[in-house]
View 1 (cartoon, one colour):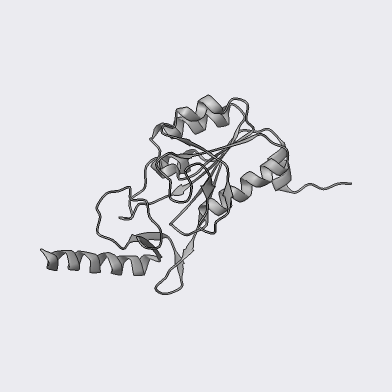
View 2 (cartoon, rainbow, N blue to C red; view 1 turned 90 degrees about the vertical axis):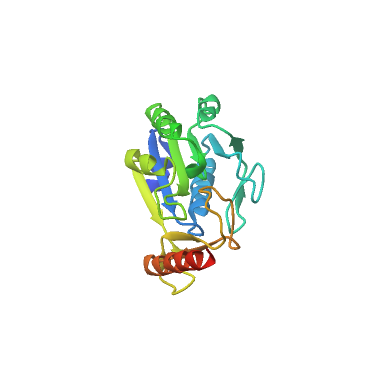
Length: 203
C-alpha cells in the first residue's frame, strides 16, 4: 500500500484554498512561498507567480528571496490583472502581497472558489507596527495562515517586527538590511521610543 503525505495530496488534488505566509522582513516568507510553488511544479501542476511591478530590488521579473533563491514571475500593477492569467492554472503564487490594492482579497477568494490553490506571502505589519494593506483581510479569509519569524538582531529572540532604520515616513519604502532590521516586540518598542526621542531632539 502506498501512503501519500498530506502535502502530496494537497498538491495533486485540485481543491481551491488560500494559504497565507506572513511575518516580518527577513523571516523567510518568500523562501517558503518558493518552496511550496516548486513542489507544486514538481507535482506537474500548472503554476503562475505574480509580484508587484514596483518591487525591483533583486529582479524586475523573478521572485527572489533574501537567500537568493528565485522563481520566474509575472510583475503586475493591479490585483485585477491576476484574473487575466489565472484561468488555466492549478496554483497561483503571490509575493509581497502587502503592496497590492485591497481588491486582492476578492481576487484570491474568486480564484479559490474556482478550484485554484492560492499561496500568498507578505508583510503582516508595516514599520509602524500597523496591519499592512490587504494582508489582514487575506489572513481572515485564508484556509491556512503560517506566521514565520525572523531573529531579533538585538537580543536573538524571535522577531515579529520590521524596524525602519532610516528617516522616511512613507509606508512603502523598498529596502533591505540597510533600511530595516527585524526586532522582537520588546526591542522594537525600545527602538521606536529612541526614534521618537531622537526626532524630538532634532526639532
